[in-house]
Each structure stands twice: as C-alpha cells, then as structure tokens.
Length: 464
Ligand SMILES: Cc1cc2nc3c(=O)[nH]c(=O)nc-3n(C[C@H](O)[C@H](O)[C@H](O)COP(=O)(O)OP(=O)(O)OC[C@H]3O[C@@H](n4cnc5c(N)ncnc54)[C@H](O)[C@@H]3O)c2cc1C
Image 1: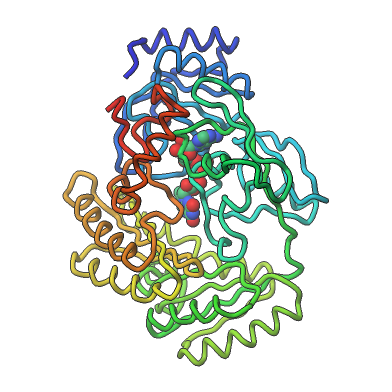
Image 2: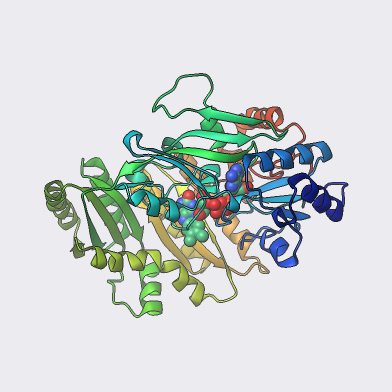
C-alpha cells in the first residue's frame, strides 16, 4: 500500500496530466472501480485516472514507479475473478477514453485501434468494408481488456482467440517507457514473442496503449442450426464428429437441459428441454448446403430429437436469443446471489467425459448449476449462483479444484479464456507450478517494483 495519501496522489496526477477531468476521486467512480461484481474484495482505489493518450499513460506510470503506487489497468470491467480489483488501492487506470480506431487497412486485413475501443463499435466500423473482428466473448469488452485476458468465445472454433488475431501492440511499461511489439506483417521470427507475452498478462507486465488486429471477411452467407439430443453424451459426440469434419463451422455452442428449462421458465419459450447445440455455418451458399446435409446425417445417427435450421437473419437472431439470454434468466432466478463460473477446457475427444465427471460432482452438492459450453473448443462453463456470505463459495472452489485436476490429467487447462486473476492462483500452481519461477522472473524484469496490478496471476510477495 502506497505511503502517499489519496489527496496527494490525485493532486499530483492532475498537475502531471494538466487536467482535472482526467482524474476522479468521486465516490461513485471510486466504488465502481473497486469491485468486479464477483467474490473478490479489494480496496477502493485512491484515484481513477482516465488517460487520453499514450503520453498520459507514460506520465502516470513514471509517477507511480517513482512513488511505488499500485496501478490496476481497467478496460470495460467485464472480467471476473478479481482482475480489475485494486487489492492494494492506488490508481485504477481506466482506458475507456482511448477509444479511437486509428487506421483501417482493408487490403491488408488489419486494423489499428486504441485499447478502449469496444468490440461492437469496432465491428460496426469494419462492416462498412465487409470485414469483421471475430473474437466474441459475449460481453461488449474493450480490445485492450480482451488482449490482456487472452479472450476467446463463440467463434474461436474457427478463427482462434486473441493470440492469433493480434499482430502487434504498443505498451507502456512500469517505468513509463513506451515499447512496440510485433509489426503489421503476417509473420515474424524476430526475437522473443513479446506480443504474446503481453496478451493474457492481465495488466501485470505493461499497459497496452495500441493494438494492431487481424480482421476477416464477413462470410457470404450464414446459417444456424439448433439441434437437441436425448442425452449430453450424444450432444458431445456430435461436437466431436462435426469438429472432425471439414465443415465451415464458425460456432458450436452447447446448453444442457437444466439451463434450457431455466430459459423457458424465464422467457416463456418452449424450447425442447434437452442438451442442445447451436451450430453456425459461414461461407458460400452451396458449401453450407452440403455441410448442413452432412451435419443432418451426424445428428440423426446420434439420435437427435429436434432440428431447426435457419438461413434468415432475423430468425437466426431469435434462435441465438436463448443461448445469449441464459445469464439474465439465471440471475432472475437467484436474486441477491453472485455468479461464479468454471472455465475448463479439454481436448475435444475428452469433452463428454469431462462434462459427465463435473456433473456428477455438482449433483452431489445439490447446488443449482447451469452448463454453457463453447463446445467446439472443448471449453465448458458451469455457472454457480452462490451466496457470498455462506460456505457456498468454498464448496464451489473445492469442486472446481477437482474439475481442474481431472482436466489436467486428460491434457486440459483450468482456465481457457477468463484468466487467473485472484481466484484461480491455486490452479495455476497445479497447472504450471514448474514455470512459476520463470513467470516471476519475467514479472520482476519488467516491473521490478511490483506496481502493475499487484497480487494478480500469482500472489505478489513484494507487496502482500
Ligand atoms: C456475460 C459475460 C460473458 C462473458 N463471456 C466470455 C467469453 O465467452 N470468453 C471470454 O474470454 N470472456 C468472457 N467474459 C469475460 C470478459 O468479457 C473478458 O475477460 C474480456 O476480455 C474483458 O475485457 P474488459 O475490457 O472488460 O477488461 P477488464 O475486465 O476491464 O480487464 C480485464 C483485465 O485486463 C487488464 N486490462 C484491461 N485493459 C488493459 C490494458 N489496456 N492494458 C493492460 N491491461 C489491461 C485489467 O487490469 C484486467 O486484469 C464474459 C463476461 C461477461 C460479463
């Protein structure tokens, strides 16, 4: 915790940045940046800073290093697990005002953006060129936050997550120096891959101030199939079979029967209450027709009990609603509770057994838990609604640990896309205990005073 008082920090930052509008100590703004809506408690930041340029970020970092003040970068604040929670107070560095789309290069399929650009705004702009940025974590997150968590989501099965879609970064290091990683070239073998080191670093190694992203053509046609199966094992087998085919699939999402019953109860829909896949095809009309025909063979062979195929964009939107709206349905069912989710990913062929193993553990507890999966990647979330003041969070942690151990034993990971933050540090130890000394050495090299998002990924012994 910094020895400098909140008042001194705010006054010094206003002086440095030359503007009162870039620094806030208003109680509602401080409170907004103190929590992420999850289970982790931190401290209220001393000040929230809204930089408007890379120079502003560099000035803040030089000041913070000089006075050993913690700095927690903040994008759109949609992550969970304590990543944006300032555990030691200090400065919450909110990048939302750095939201310019700097350059679109349609012929080179890349775009240069500031970190506060939100993904929906980026796609609205790219649509003018028939292009889009595919990484879709559901929430309208910022590109800087998405890079810092190595976000992925519904389209990863086809386009990959953030890592394959970021070509280059500009970042400000802890000492205020500005560095550039990567280039606009599609490939580079020039030295260590610092771009991919900063991606997924959760703001612990540098503040991302600009990103060069790969962009893709919007497919000529999109068709969505919603297919229900009589059991989860067959739905999972369908995922494996579809992934093994060369079909032009851009999304394969899965909800289980219980989750669909919650959606039906909340929205008055009449979806078949059985394990269901949402499969999106994107490509030429002819190729999609062939792939759907092949898909039908797989679905019917595996005993599908309901198949709906839609090519009309409005009808597709309605089909996706149930998948996208399970969150609000769940929250409405458990007023006052907090959601917390697992983020396991296993090799595709292990998906059926990993889900079945987790379901057995969960059912023994009697908790009300929903399943939503980016099934095409082997990534599944069990969403628990817990009372933070009860023993439920500890129970969930025990279940998650068993699930993580099972996933690791079959070649998987404890965190596919949400990152480690505070909540999953024990799992990182299980998964990469042998690498922690190297990770700590990298952290110490880039941030010797330990001021960048301290206490995240691994407990920061210089501060704790
Ligand atoms: C309904 C819902 C669904 C979700 N589904 C998915 C999903 O499918 N896949 C997925 O990956 N995630 C998902 N998430 C989680 C979340 O959207 C992602 O983690 C997202 O990438 C966070 O982006 P953000 O801009 O909100 O970042 P924040 O939450 O603000 O920050 C995330 C982390 O990045 C750091 N950070 C932010 N900006 C910068 C910067 N410029 N430089 C350095 N560090 C920075 C922060 O310090 C923090 O550690 C979901 C969230 C919600 C609410």
